[in-house]
Image (tube, one colour):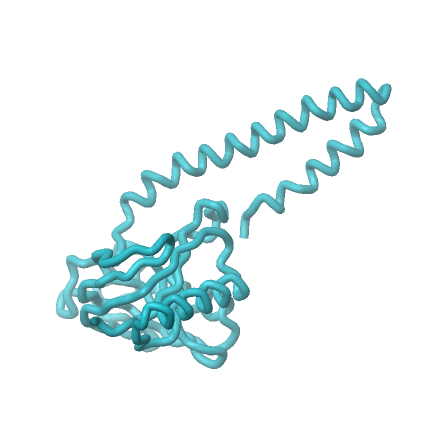
Amino acid sequence: MMGFATLSPSYGDFSRSYGEYGTAEKGRSMQRKHLWWALAGVGGAAALAAILWGPIASRVERARYKTVRRDRDIEIRDYTPMIVAEVEVSGDREEAIQQGFRTLADYIFGNNTDMRVITMTAPVTQQGDAESWQVRFVMPARYTTDTLPRPIDPAVNLKHLEAKRFAAVRFSGSARDASLRRHSERLSEFIREKGLRPLSPPAFAFYNPPWTLPFLRRNEVMIEIARQ
C-alpha cells in the first residue's frame, strides 16, 4: 500500500547529507531549504491526487441509499434493492479480499457468457469470519438478473438483495485489521446505546483502489439493523 511512510527515508538522507556538508550554519540553512521543497513536493503530490481523484470518483456508480439519520461519522441508511456478484473465499482476511477481488474483476472484465465488460462500481464489500469471507461487487443499477451476463467461473454467484437498513461508520486511512476491529466495536457500541437491533455481523466497505493515498480513502464498517 502506498503511503507517506514510503517517503520517510528521504528525510533521513537530507539530514545525513547536509549535516556533513560545509559549516554547521550553512548545513542547517541548506537543510531547511531542501526540507521545505520536499514538504512542498509532498503537499503538491497530495493536492494533485485529490484533484485527480475527484473526477474519477464522481464517475463511479455507487450503491444507492438514503441517509435516515446522522450522528457525527455514523449514519443510519436505507439501501435500495441491488444485485451483487459474490465469491466466497477462505483464509486470511486481506488475502481473501485480494483473491475475491481478482475473481470478480475477471467476471466484470469479460469472463462471462457475453464476453461483455461491466462497469466497475463502489464499494467492494467483504463480510465473514476467520474461516470464510464473502466478497461482493455491486452491479450497475441499470442491470436486472435477466440482463446481466452469466459468469463463466462457477465460483461467482449473482444475487438479488432486498432493500435493507444499515448503520455505518466512515473513516479514512489504511483499513488494516486493527482499524476495522476498532470501528466495528465502536459501531456495535453505538447500536447498543441507541437501542437498535443488529441483524448481521459487521461488513467492510472499500471505495478506493489500493494506490489511493491513505488520507483520501473512504472505508466503512456496516451492520444491518432492524427498521423501527
